[in-house]
Length: 335
Ligand code: IMP
Ligand code: MG
Image (cartoon, rainbow, N blue to C red; front, side, top):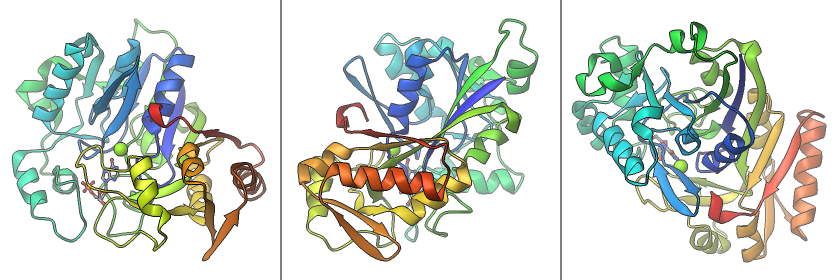
């Protein structure tokens, strides 16, 4: 068994969907597995020129690859079924390709109603936190108990370890949210209720030694949506928000903007053990004409895109690992 993992190194919305989409095109994956989160996530994917926003469903569906919602996820059934219908409308055979691990959990209407009352964290109000709370309180509802999901349910163990139809399992793990929102490593309590690191992928049922590449995804600046103060005072941030279309894919809320924080990027890269780094949306800073990043509490000013890229790439190699291969992408349209 071989598995690649796509993991977000900041606060979500860094373009994991785009990286996963590109990897699906290049590899012969047998499965794409979503490993955490629920419909709080919004993955924007441009497939053959059409913009799709998925919440639950992994991007393997666009390539005819079996796409599994793993046991680390929580599912709102109506949202899920709507997503299936949307994809089918565009000729994507989601009904056949999408599977749900029997031991994933359900977001009930009660969970949603409770989450709607949140005023402290700035959640997406999709019922995510209450669903995970009930899971860990051992009073949750598992996917296999919901009759509306019968056609989609699989045993992930059987699928991966006793599958007579597929000889060499090759998985792409596609996560949701990001390091800064991780329940343990994020800025608690301003976090989501699941694990957003590479460990979370492994918890979905593969041996640690099956991991081949760990693709860390970041943006050339940072964005965060939620209740804490995050945005800096610089006037460029309004411009970045407009040009970069930094509004939540799920809730439409404006994302708060700040410069890339190298210390956090380094911590997230170390803890995830990445060997590939993708820094997206360099084209937005290019349009704004400013290149800045935090190193500790200091804001560094770079003269050019090349200067900032060289700085990031060199520091990653020196301070995280020699093995890290860094890619910069300025292709806003495909995020
Ligand atoms: P929850 O996951 O809805 O409970 O929200 C907790 C925090 O995570 C809030 O700050 C949300 O805005 C943030 N969050 C959850 N999902 C995403 C996402 O997919 N992208 C960005 N932020 C998210
Ligand atoms: Mg998103």
